[in-house]
Image 1 (cartoon, one colour):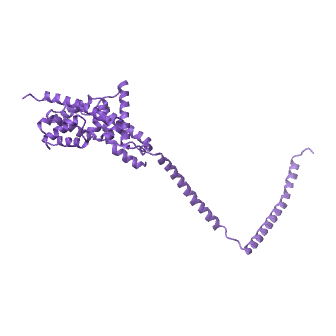
Image 2 (image 1 turned 30 degrees about the vertical axis):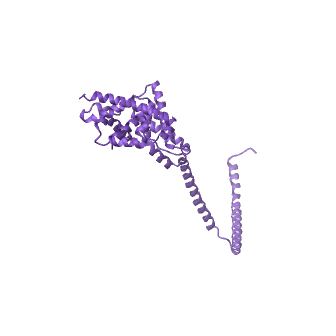
Image 3 (image 1 turned 180 degrees about the vertical axis):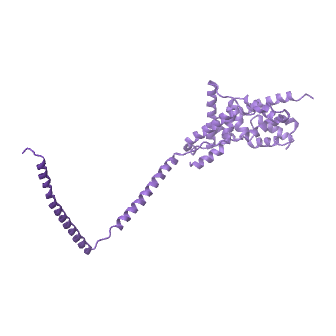
Length: 151
Length: 171
C-alpha cells in the first residue's frame, strides 16, 4: 500500500475519524514484515491490539439448569408411577375375569343343592357335638364330691 | 429462549466479555469471576435478552457496569488488585522479550488511561465494534465516543513517541 495513504489514515485514526475498514487496513499493514521505518514505532500498538483480541475464555461456563429441568424429573417419576399403576390394574382386572366364569342355570341349581347339603351336614355335626357336651355335668358332680361348698 | 440458544449466545460472547473484564479489572481471577457472575445474571434475565434490540450489546453493557461497580468497591476496600498477566516479561532474557517488551509498554500506557477510555479502546481497537454498537453499550453519543477515543489514542501516541525518542540514539 502507498506509504502516503497509510500516513493519512494514521492521522485520521488519531483524530477518531477512521472507519472500521480503514482501521483493519492499518492493522493489516502493521502485522506484515516490511513496515516503513517512519511508522515502525506504531507497530507495537497495533500488534498489541491484535494480540489482545486473541485472548480467550477457556474456563467452563457455569452449569445452566433451567427450572423446567427439575420439574422434568417430577414428571418422569409421576410417569413411571402411573405406568406401574396401569399395568397393575390391567393385571388385576384380567385376574378377576379369569376367576369368574359365567355360571349356567344347571350349575346354579347344583351349587344350591351342594350348599344346602353342606349346611345340613354342619348342623348335624353341631348337634352331635352338643350331645357330647352333656358330660360336662359330670365334672360338676365330681367336684362337689371333693370340695364341699356351702349350700 | 431455550437452554441451547442461551448456551450458544453465551459461547459467542464469552471471550469478548472476558477480555473487557480483564482490561478493566486487570486481575485474571477477577475477570474469570466476572464472566461467571455475568453468565448467571444473563441467565436470570434470559427472557429480557430476547426482547432487547442487540442481545450482545446488552451483555457487554452488563459486564461494563459490573466491572465499574467492582472497581468502585475496590477503591473502598482494596482487595486483590494484583495482576498475573505479563509479569514474567521482566525476568526473561532481554533479546527474546524485545517484542514482548514493546507490547508490555503499550499495556502499561493503556493502564494510565481512565477506565472509560480503556473501555472505548477495548471495544473499538481490540474488539473492532462499530460506533453504533459502542454507543449502545456505553450509552454515549457517537460523536462524544469519537472525541474521547481520539483523546485516548493521542495519549498513547505521546507515550509511544516519547519512548521511541528515548530508545533510539540520535544519528
